[in-house]
Amino acid sequence: MKKRFIKYFLWLGLVFLSLFISSCLPSFFQTENPPTSITPSFPPFDTYADSFVKKYGWDKNYVTRWPNGIVEVFDMTGYPLLQEILDKYNDMIGGPTSFQLSFNPFSPIIVTVDYSLNLYQNCGYTEVYIGNNSMIYGATIFIFPDENLCPVYATLLHEFGHVVGFGEHTNDGCVMDPINLGNTHFSEPVLTMVHRLYQLPIGSYLP
Ligand SMILES: [Zn+2]
Image (cartoon, rainbow, N blue to C red; front, side, top):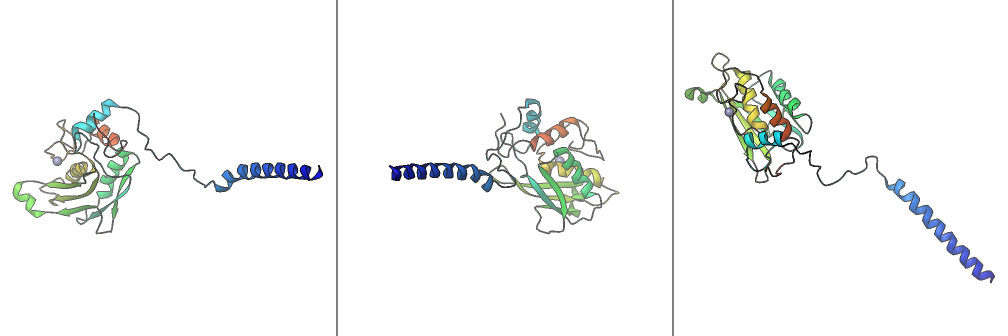
C-alpha cells in the first residue's frame, strides 16, 4: 500500500513537472522578434490604382518591379542632383523599395552618358532588364549631358520613371510624356501607379 502511494506520488510529480516545463518552454524559445506570417499579405483591393499599374507597367498581365529593399545606383555622369531625383521616386513608393546612390560599380542601376544620342536629337534612353519571374534586376540610363541642348534634370526624372516601372508613356503634359522639354510635374496617374506598383507582390496577376 505504501509502495503504491509512492508510485502515485511519483506520477503526480511527473505530471506537475511536465506541466511546468511546457509552460516555461515557449517563453524560453521566444525570440525578440516573433516570426511574422510567411504568406505575403495582399494589399486591400484597389481597382482604380491597379488599372494604372496595368496600363503603364512593363507587363500588362503581371506586376513587374524591383524587389523590396535598397537598390544601388552607380552614377558615371557626376550629376549633382541625382539623389534628389531618386528621392522623388522613393517618396512616391513610400517604403518597400528605395533607390540610393552608391560607389559600387557593380550596382544594378548604372547612369552613364551617350554622346551619340545627340545625332538622333534624343536626350536620353533607358534599358530595363526583367527576369522571367517579373522581377526587374538591372537598368542602364544613357543621357546626353549637355544642359544647353537637353534639360538634364527633367530627362533623368523621365528615364528613372522607366527604371522604377513605367513601360509606357503618359499623354497628360507630365514628366512621363514621350517628349519632355523640361517638364518636372508628376501627374496623379503617375503618382498613383508608382505607389501602387510597390504595394503589389512581384509577379502577381493583374486582372
Ligand atoms: Zn520615355
